[in-house]
Image (tube, rainbow, N blue to C red; front, side, top):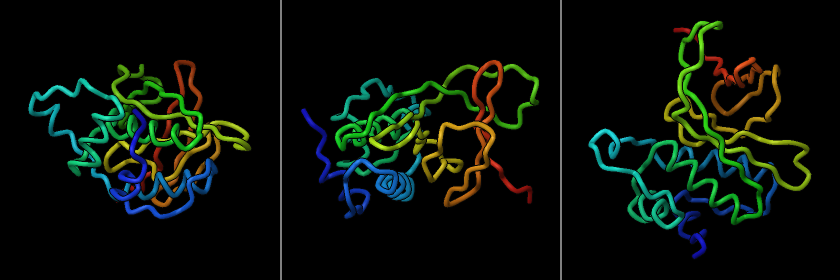
Length: 172
């Protein structure tokens, strides 16, 4: 059963184009991040999140207008983007916060998306499920360069043990 894109677009108040381009990807990431809240109530309450099918995610995040955590947000976004003609890969990831540069990386407990499309010239990272630190723009899978978003800039570093995405947060 296909995902109901009209219901999803209504949920995020999106009325724009739907062709697989960088502009559309940027718009969808921005409005999804602003509209569907990050929420981890089910895991905290011991309610299993064991169905990540398009129907289950649409039921919770779209029809019941709830929020979700990374597996739910990025799961739904991945299904939406695939329906629109993007090529989507799901990546396992780690959350690294104020870790010393030489410290080993923690376990993979996060997920995000790798997205390509005709003419993309490479892969973009999309992560609409990281709460207050969610990158609000697609980020090129390109190391070293500082990449602006509608919030803080990010940089992707290539380490021996994997990539590390750094949010360049200003100290207050």
